[in-house]
Every structure is written in structure tokens, then in C-alpha cells.
Image 1: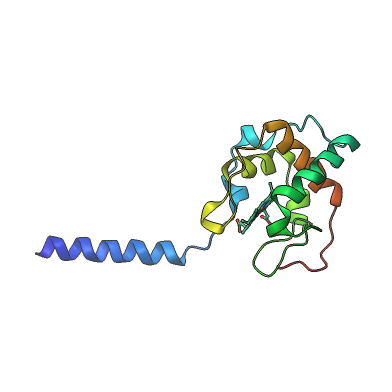
Image 2: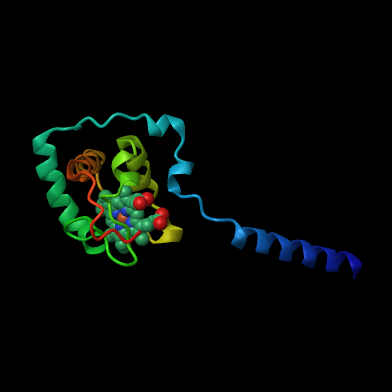
Amino acid sequence: MRIAWRCALCLLFCALAWSASKYAGWLEHVPDSDRHRANPYSGQTDAVAAGSRLFSDHCAKCHGQDALGSKKKPSLRTPEVQQASDGEIFWLLRNGDLRHGMPSWSAIPEPSRWQIITYVKSLGVNLQGSAR
Ligand code: HEC
């Protein structure tokens, strides 16, 4: 019985610690090898155009056609996103952040994902309408 109580207390403590720990963000989970991956389309205008179409198809419904986000969905024109490396965003698109409502896009072919990133990066920083 006493052991059972200790287990229960321990579980309770773990649950509290877990819920109290502030979520540090997906960026911290990106392994170095992914962080430094180069975008084969970086800065290419064709890729921006292709990425823009893909963004409309897959991303705009949550992040907005202008990528400024909405109340519950983050803007992609924040310094956090614009200053993230292409490799970091690529990691996020592959893995998603399901607990926070960001789906995985691993079903979209890799070249298309890089094009989407090229497009997002072409938008630059614009804090207007940012949900944060
Ligand atoms: C179903 C809604 C939904 C769709 C569709 C969606 N996202 Fe997201 N996305 C989210 C949410 C919610 C977050 C916030 C996750 C978090 O807090 O970690 C997010 C986060 C992000 C972030 C990180 C933002 C930050 O400030 O850390 C990027 C980059 C991103 N999404 C890009 C995309 C791209 C590119 C697409 C299209 C391929 C896309 N998203 C499609 C819901 C969505």
C-alpha cells in the first residue's frame, strides 16, 4: 500500500512538472545535421512562383494567403520564422508539430517542400497582423 502511494505521488509530481514546463518550441528539437541542410532552390524566382502555388494549396488555409496567420495560427513573417534556417523549416515540414496543430508535410515531395520554403523566405518580415 505504501509503495502504491509513493508511486501515485511520484506520478502526480511528474504530471505537474510536465504541465508546468513551458514548451520551448520546435526549433530546439531540430538536430544539427538538419539545421544546416542547404535549400537547392534558395533565392530562385521560379521556385518562389512554384512555392507560392503550393503554399495556396496546402498552407494558406491555416497561415493565411498572406502568411500573416490568424488568432490561433502563427504568422510566417515573424523574425523567428524568417531567421530560421531553411533546413530548420524543412525539418518542421517533415515532422510537423502535431501537439501544437502543425501537420507533417512529408507526403509532399521534397523538391516541392524546398520550393514552399523559398516562397516563405521571399516574404520577409512583416509583423502586421502577427498573432504573437
Ligand atoms: C491545419 C493547420 C495548418 C496547416 C495546413 C499548416 N500549418 Fe504551419 N502551423 C500550424 C500551427 C498551429 C503552428 C504552430 C505550431 C507551434 O506552435 O509549434 C504552425 C507552425 C508553423 C511554422 C512555425 C512557426 C513558428 O513561429 O514557429 C511554420 C514555419 C509553418 N507552420 C509552416 C507551414 C507551411 C509551409 C505549411 C504548408 C505546407 C503549413 N505550415 C501548413 C498550423 C498549420
